[in-house]
Image (cartoon, rainbow, N blue to C red):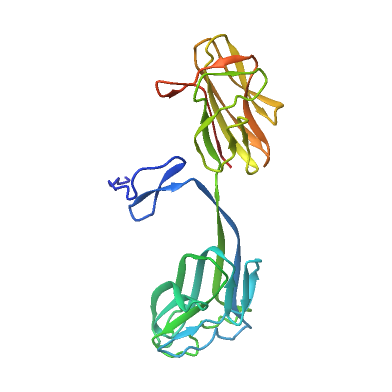
Length: 314
């Protein structure tokens, strides 16, 4: 059975277009609506011919781990002389670095450009006595850099060993330390709510010009035209509420002014609402169009009786 523990929200109240997130340590925070897209990973490794150890290490100092092979290349990462250079961005490192006959050992991801340690690897132990098993130190974490930086994997060993960076299996190509790096790109998702602030006459078969917004995360809604412009290709969800002062009317979502999805049908003084998920290409416009000229009710007692909302799903 799961256990629920009370936690505090650490950063106060939300602003429009924020969502509640958890940091994994029991703390909650409000963050802007974003979508994280993972690009393909760059992978590098220490490979040797069959029967060749991964390399020797001398105890008592941080030593560069041999990395000599690009297994999967990306334009934002390059390998030279055991060092990996990355372009500006945010990256997740997943590193496994074996060692044999070194007793206590640990790895780290070292920022060579800035002479700083980016991520400490796990502390490990395997006996220097003959016949013991090989084990690995792991480096896992996220690094964000504002400019190109050079990194290398380093190891600190408790005992000098000819097999410090791995003992051979002799079955074929030997593979020792492996470094997988995934680039992360955060993209703001479009989300908005617009409304009529005052009673307004809106013409038939023309977009209702909602003149105010509660929020618009990507500045994609135009209060002069009443149109939302898709900032990226994807699926979007739209909804609207419709309240005419008198007379009945149908309203529909129109894509680029032509393709139409029925949204709502409303009688005089009554509010109706509707919604639809619509696939859009970047640059497409969406508006709410009535089929009859009507005067629409603005904000009444603080209630937005005519509104138009949308957000990106994918």
